[in-house]
Image (cartoon, rainbow, N blue to C red):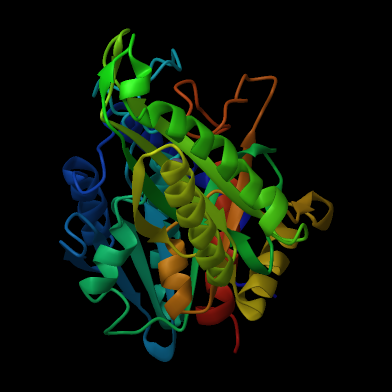
Length: 394
Ligand SMILES: [Zn+2]
Ligand SMILES: [Zn+2]
């Protein structure tokens, strides 16, 4: 017999979750600048009697809830940061911090984390073990997870298992995505600089045009996925920035290309970068130019461990029903990969799409929004999963 009806508990806190989420939505903060947000989180956790630590990974907050009996340590992770986007949702609770927007749903995640903290605090006396509530800054490519690990978030106590989730508008509200094994890609970025020899647009024969060389490089890179990678693998190579020149009639000295590589394994990542470098340097040479490349690894793939994934799947079956669970991976990335590399766990997705209400926009879109009922599903499933370790009989 379950000790706690997590769906009921989450439904009971729904209005509070919505109010909190909308407040956070109005005052989004960029990565490592979550001063107001982390202040609210710390205050709430303090009120609930958690042992609270601030400044873990700059603006990160950790709240520890410990039961009277010994048992496993479960880490639950929620991200808090916004994005540099001008909001166009038209909602009355749209961003008041112009140029910053909660366009990924992390306002929802923070609100869900606080609701779940409130629920679990009620059952503290029955707990064996502890739950570490981790509110992470700077998930959006700035290295928040890494900063928290460097500040010891995975020590004292070290978690035995970890869970995190994302509200996900590619899936309908009421559905849940859970996949064992790799579910989000590793991500890295690269910059290629093509050095040519500038000159007058009317005398191209006296110049070595880096724009023409760069254009050929962009085209050639498209063949890596189609010609060098096993068709059964999932890989993306995208150029997102092509910068060169300043006016009509001047051939510039250099061109700059920036792009990203996504894959589910590091070996493929190395192969792709070897091919990018070969193509860039040789293609540049063919046009009398020179190319150099810099790469930065952003995050590892998110890989779900079998045990914790089965726990989430069972929780999702209970909360939304087996027929509302979908198994799909994404080439998007998440720095939860850093935590999952050290601690077994599961990262899952809670559907937030609702066409009738117009919540159809992808994450990072200026009109992004989600069906707030998704927060009930997420809190209930994560609560169930945590309870499996610290509340139910072992
Ligand atoms: Zn995002
Ligand atoms: Zn996100």
